[in-house]
Image 1 (cartoon, rainbow over the protein chains, first blue to last red):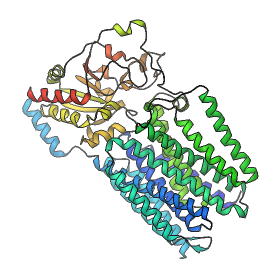
Image 2 (image 1 turned 60 degrees about the vertical axis):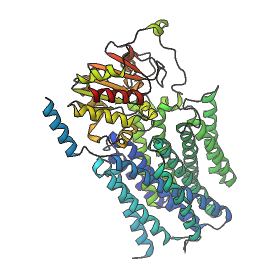
Image 3 (image 1 turned 90 degrees about the vertical axis):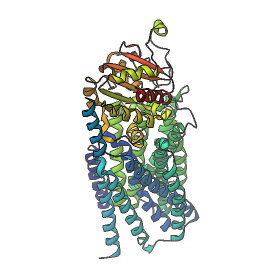
Image 4 (image 1 turned 120 degrees about the vertical axis):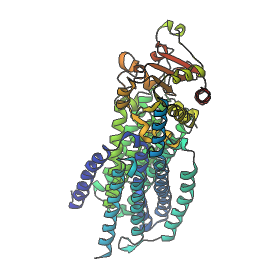
Length: 109
Length: 464
């Protein structure tokens, strides 16, 4: 076991706890955007794809790396755009509508 | 500061934005902003990578990289922007799957790149895990997509000896991993790729539609872990942090979902739940009387109510009735009726599905109430209206130990003064279980398409 591996393992273990800690505070109303948003975040594999295509020496590596870049871009771009589209729809009750409803309620009773 | 240090620093900033984005999801107010911050962080990381060095030289094939990105952009943006909101579960599934595929390719290619240097055993293990998990996520998501898109049946697909065959495929994957570790053979890596592909398919086939929320969130965590494995291989802290965050959050969400179903994760994944449609318990089930009513009857009942609760389920999404439902709610509110929506955590085909569906119909999120709170509110409700839900309101989950859904927390629709149950027919719900609530004396059944029925109720409420 090398020091480098140990350093990565440290980052891994700490990230597990950070992940669990933050996610346990997400309300269930936002579970779909959470999935979609974390989906976009693992699109960071695009960085890995760029690095392997950038290092490619053989045709096989070039083909696989190129495919990886395409798939990773789909993941990252699609993930962020879909999440944004979802979150755009979540709106609070506007104070006006609430006031209207209350006024109406008062008038009826 | 050297170039390498600066780039690592930028990667750290990117990792920080990802954490902030997930933190932002703690409230609907800051969530959208958080997502944009993460997108900016991602852009920063990608731009920084163009200036990175690999094996001591600048990136080769920069044009090819840009071309690949352009292809991805041209496909992803219109798809993500213009696909129907109702196709959201399958869209999330497919974007997740391609991420898994990319992670697998990264691990695979890196192995081809470094194999002449005789990599250490732990490096080979990282590669193998990246390939295995990434591929399972890829092919599994593809099948989940096909099920959700209705390219194939949403019911579990089972065949004789399925569990044995699945176990054998799993063991085969394990065997290939062990042999590859010993021999470091590239050829076997391709074998693993094929076995993992088959494993992903075989594993998802027996999982039925109602269990898909758990599956999607599990596959999401798989892709995260595959990305983390690639991060270990490439020596990238950014990939490890981002992948692990997603892996951990996906696992936690999966746990929450299975808890909300009152079943263990293995039971959800391996029991092919919902494959057997029972004809109802007892011979007399067919003859039991139910009370049915017309939309106008419902409107009259609502006219006397002061507190109404809607309980939506997947059927609402199928009938595309979310906008009419909101219209009904608005009309009731105009008459001074208090209205809210009781949301079961696993209603629909992905975690939180009902919330997104109703948000799309402009229902303010303050009106969407989680199960526990809803159950205490229901006791003082005059009318509970069940739209497209079934198993999530089935009292058998509480009081019939023999029922397959026994133990699942449910929304207690029957706590309300009156229950209105909208149904297309007397056909049982997804789990194939008869629903006692239908025969409850408090219940009025309204047969027909949910959208039609709701439209008629709206008209009748307006007229009254």
